[in-house]
Amino acid sequence: MAVSSRPLRDPARLAALLALAALLLFAATATWLQFARTDLDWVRATLSLYLHGPHGLWLRSAYCVLAAAIAVLAAALHARLQGPARRGLPLALFCAAGVGLAAVAVGDSWLPDRAPLLAPLVHALAAQTAFLCVTTAMLLQAWCFGRDPRWRGFHRLAWWWAWLAFAGLWLHVLWRDTPRGLGQKAVIALVVAWLALAALQLWRQPRRHG
Image (cartoon, rainbow, N blue to C red; front, side, top):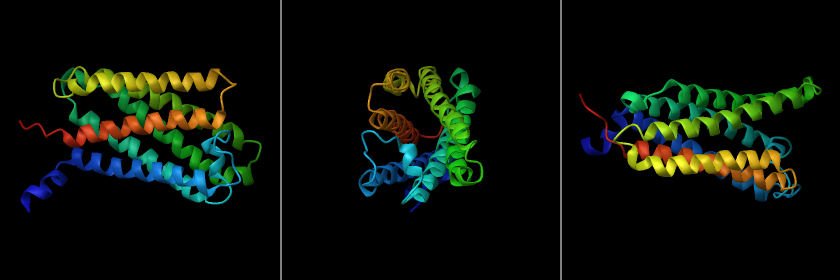
């Protein structure tokens, strides 16, 4: 009994478990909507279009859950890393990404009806903030992993995966001839997978005593 409950006594590992559950919920919701929304072409329609119309509330709620997961995971990683690997900038950027993501969900809930001219601007700024902050934070956090001996084995995978997501984001932004929906969803999938891998690695890390 004591052995099975021990991981839940470690706040960082508990945060990792909660983040993994939230990431899975977001991924399941977004995937389900690709089949449920037959009125949208999943290759051309960006995920933002699924925030409105049938089942839009589910995705807006999943956005907020994902935003909370990003902040919780970032705080847990910051707490678990040691010495020169602990930096405040990745934590700040991850939290800013979470705020941007939540702003997309909350703003798209009521702004289109109450301020239709302002809604597209708020959505664009919040979404761009979320994408830029989270991919930059992933790069910085992956670099920090290499400065902690206990995380060094995860550094290479996290580093190159973060670069892939960062490059994918800019490819999506700059190459306008690509299918907009598919490109955006691919970047989101890379980000969510990176976060899940980091959470899984955090779960596997034993607490440092003393």
